[in-house]
Image (cartoon, rainbow, N blue to C red; front, side, top):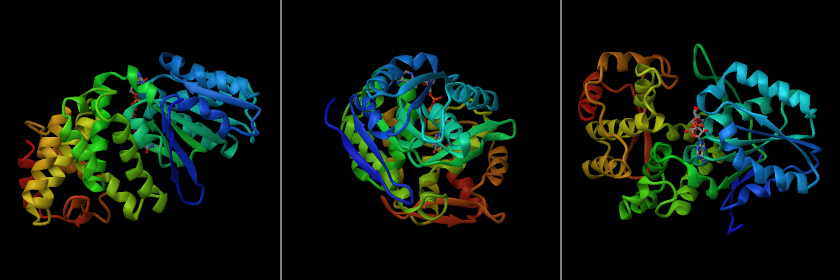
Length: 357
Ligand SMILES: NC(=O)c1ccc[n+]([C@@H]2O[C@H](COP(=O)([O-])OP(=O)(O)OC[C@H]3O[C@@H](n4cnc5c(N)ncnc54)[C@H](O)[C@@H]3O)[C@@H](O)[C@H]2O)c1
C-alpha cells in the first residue's frame, strides 16, 4: 500500500475517509469484533472485492460475498430484498459488518441495506467510481429508487469508514470519470479554487481516469464535502451549498427521463447557476465565464440546446429545494463564496437559461 491520507469526518458519529492506492485491504481495521462480514459488489467488480475478502479472511472474519446488480438496477426494492436475504443467509448479526464495493449506486443501496438490517449494522464503503469517492460514499446518505422517483426512500447511516482505493480508478470508463468530474469542479467553485487551477493546468489529463493530479483532485473534492457534512449532517444550512448547480440539473434529469448522465446535467446546471448569479448582480463576469471554460476543458457539456424551458421550469417547481412555493438557488457571491438566491424573477431565470440553451 502506498501513502494513505486520512480525512476525519466529524459530527455525532465520526469516521475516517482513507485515500490511497490499495487502501481497501485496510478494511479489517474497521470491522473489529465482527465475526461475519458481508461484502456486496456487482459481479463485474468482483476483482476489487477479492483483496477485501482476502484481507478479511486473513484477519479472522468469515467473509461472505453478496451479488448486487450494477448501476441503478441495484437501487431497486427487489435488489434490496435480495441483499437482506443474503444477510440473513450469512447470519449477519448486530455486531457484524457489511462492506460495499462499487459505484455510488452500489454504496447507496448497500448502505441502505446496512441501515435497515437489524435496525442498523456497520457499513464500510469502498467506492470505485470518481463520483462515489468524492460524493456518494461520503456523508452517510443512503437510498433506493421507487416508481415515484429517485432516492425517495433512504436513511442517514454514516459509515464506519470510507476506503478510497485509487487503484480502482484504473478500469473506470472515461465517461464515468468525466461524469464524476462535474462534482469535483463544483467543489472547486463553492470552496476550493485550487481544484480549478489543477484542471486548468492540465485540461487534457483531467479528461481521463488516473490522469493528472488524480490524488490531489480526489482528496480536495472529498475535503470540501467532508467540511460541509461534518458541520451539518442533515440537509440544511451549509449542506445546501453542495446543491450548487443541482436545481436545473435535477430538472434536466427529470425532463430527460434520467437518460442524461448526472454529471452532464450538473455541468449545465453549474453554467446556469453562474449565469443566474451574474444576472442577479452577485457574481463577476470572469468567474461566471470560468465555469464554462473549466467544464469544457474536462469534456463536460456546457449547454442544453433546444431545451423546453416550460417543462424544465415545471420540473424545478417540484424539486425538493423549492420550499414554500418559492424557488431557491445556490449562487456564488464570488469564487468559493456560495449564498442563496430566493425566488428570483422569471425574467432572470429566462436570461440565465438563454445562456445554456
Ligand atoms: N448518497 C449520496 O450522497 C449520493 C451522492 C451522489 C450520487 N449518489 C448516487 O450515486 C449513483 C451514481 O453513482 P456512480 O456515478 O458511481 O454510478 P454507478 O454506481 O451506477 O456506476 C457506474 C457504472 O460503473 C461501473 N463501475 C464502478 N466502478 C468501476 C470501476 N472501477 N471500473 C469499471 N467499472 C466500474 C458500475 O458497476 C456501473 O456499471 C446514483 O444512484 C446517485 O443517486 C448518491
